[in-house]
Length: 321
Image (cartoon, one colour):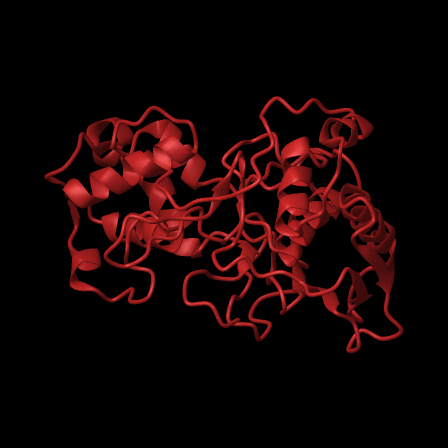
């Protein structure tokens, strides 16, 4: 990881304490969301909200989490703007306050990759194209033939689900990518494993229900599933579909960022008991990133039973979201 602008793509909530603190706001009578009216209000654990918003790119505190202004327990103007930006990104009512829909969204299991990247002294954020996004610097693999391997603790019953996920991305690339199992885990371009707790990459998992998985973009290639989660194949109540999560994480392995729209596989949050697949927007993002040309992007969408409602945009630009 060489970029200073983004954290590894990780399906984690930044800290368990963030979830607990936000949940606490809902439970404590004097701190219910509708009473956090706006700037000037003081909340005992607002520091946790600031850490959450900073981690996901809405406040410019990402590189130094000990700044004095994070310690200030005030709902000031800067925080109000950050909350509004978060609400807009998640299609919530932009009140600038910690209302119940906003707190509920913050409590959802999600990827740890920032939704936006705020550059110091500028208003710039993530590269945005249509609904999909690229990682700043647009890291990508220099070749289309990639190998993947499973760590020794990866359950064999889930390997076919990952194989299918790779196959779907290969098809989406119109043959640009081919993925094959490597002869050894250590020799693979993409290393996939089940891990738990502190597993040595600096982003420890923190138990069932909060941490799902995380992946590192090119050229790192690591993908870790949290072994403490309830993984299944298909839509099962109170469990997470591993193939859906693999599709999402492979998108990160290939260099895609999060989409702003819930229907896409690259949406940041996940619910138990749900399966998802690639959408035309996910497909377009991959194809633009790697310069894959086609005379019939609509036809590719139709292959997946999808309709492309948004025109194909062939260049990206900096801008606020």
